Length: 433
Image (cartoon, rainbow, N blue to C red):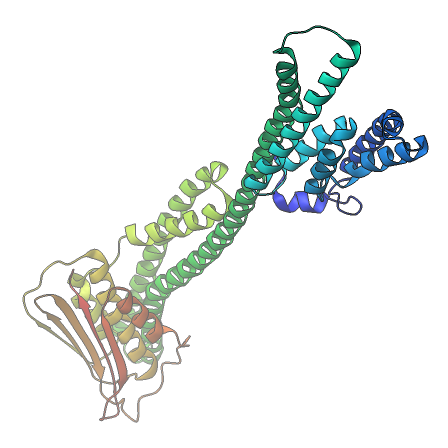
């Protein structure tokens, strides 16, 4: 389990400049050990320098305790280590200080300069002290021993902490970069999840609207004709029994057709939903909404939708319900894309339904034109007779909106509005491909 940068910042809670309490404890422990070392080394330094021993001990304690600030001011620690090198003290200060400097964010040229100064300082001091010790002891050694021992000691006290600090600093920067990248990826994934959820909700809303429109097209027209026939049946039931029987048969046929279309649509939607439910176990939640919307869309598209060859039958049903309607077809009839034919059929169907609802008894003209690259349709009704009574059919007020959405989705043009004569006209042009 990884820790991101935001969680790391939250977890920090050390005193002063320390990020964590354990870092403060470690630095305090190093400072105590270094102060003890330098304090002990201050005794021979005081004797050699001819100063009181307590002064040398205090000087050593102060020099060793500088490791307390090694994380905040690593350059100061290294400078102190270089300064106390001639006094033969600060072994731990030099090692830890150089490591802290190399692991910090200080520019490389400064790190190299201070490391070189410390290397030269240790080399010179070791060379001088070794020669003094050899002279005091009057020991005969080769000329190579002093340079070799001095260089080896200087490199041993400088190279390992420097290389280790550079490695730790590079690793720390890499980890911080990875944490920042993880934070960025986490934010991006969160944004993607939110957008996917929004898209899923939008797709569900769109498909609910589309399915509602399909249900409206299937039910509204059939039920409107059933209401008209039922009203006619009520009017002629006693005067003309034979006509009443015909109207009753028409009502039954309309009801059966409406039930058949509803059954087909619900059956296709149900089969699409079953497939979508089987996939839910392995699909993320945001994708389920999109999959459900896609399944609903496929269900509507794959259903047995109406086609333009059924326009004549559609007009005949309205004529049988008592509407004076004329159909004219211009151009050579041809098959088009299923979606285009279904939309054209639904536009004519909805327009005829609106005539039944709002202009009962009005003469209506249906025109269908097959053009080179498009199909045009127009449904226009004259003003209803003054003596005609309303059919009493409810209206949801979404018929024209639904027709316009259908036509616009296919790149067509839809226009509707009253005519100068007082009637109403619905026109649409849809690309044939």
